[in-house]
Image (cartoon, rainbow, N blue to C red; front, side, top):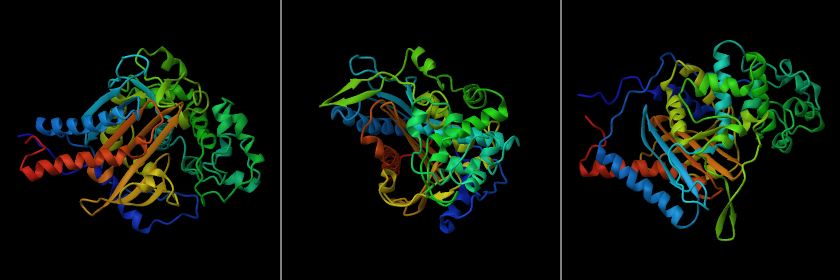
Length: 423
């Protein structure tokens, strides 16, 4: 008999995180609260019946086929991971609207700001090795980093830049990082801006400031960031199609071209070089959905040799509340609160079926007319990633929509007395 569940699951990694939501308020300090994990949690292998896989495939196929039929998207790819098993992955639509080549599970997309999760994990690896600390001052690594307020310049930490809590205005100098200006040059220009809050007191999303994390990692490792990500993440996780350069994207013979909406149709666009210089940490990763499935497995706690779960819990810890109700993820069913951790959004919501609290570790991305979404449903040991080669409204709700599909399929089988798992 095959074992389906082990006593220890990666849900333990998030237990303290769930409990912290009840008491978490918008912080006034510049420190993150460490989540203590005593046991390394590694997912058991889960085996699903052919019936379950077939029904799940039918439902997801219908979801994406409807979007293509309505011309809402050009191409897409999806991966779903449960514990340590990829239970679904597939490409949909076309790589280029002008050609017939279909998207498959090895087709490469740009993932935009979903790259921030890679940067924060990379920082966590170096924290784990004692090479940096979350509370290290940015100015100690980048001497020409300067804000208008000299005292605040001395206060900004690595945790501040990874959690968007530096106090600088929204998207400060994103235009400069997209234009390819060296990050060290940009670092000296922040003094021309007026801060909107004290460090650690306010959430204000950044790209240029976030990219400083990559320069810090380069400084301590003594290698270009591209090599560091390759050596510390892509190679150990066997992410063979993943890269962080414009050249690698150009050289691939299986890429999904970006598209722009024109009247009632789509037009393929050229690839651009935005974020491939000093902006890699903020938005420079390329990957296929097969590799994103491997990334999801890692995020569910399956590769402690790459980074320990207790360090991952630091990365996922909520640091600052994202206030308001206008963000697309704040309109997801059952949404209660949203926070930002270190390179990740952390959402608290109530599951409509179970009527129980749930936590979603999430991020979205948009660059060069690509869209991407990734999410970890911690209590369910479930990960979902969707990649698109066109800007579209579907991306805003694809995560909760696919989560509902997964639950609906399981619920229907339970009602029939069928089993989703192989015993």
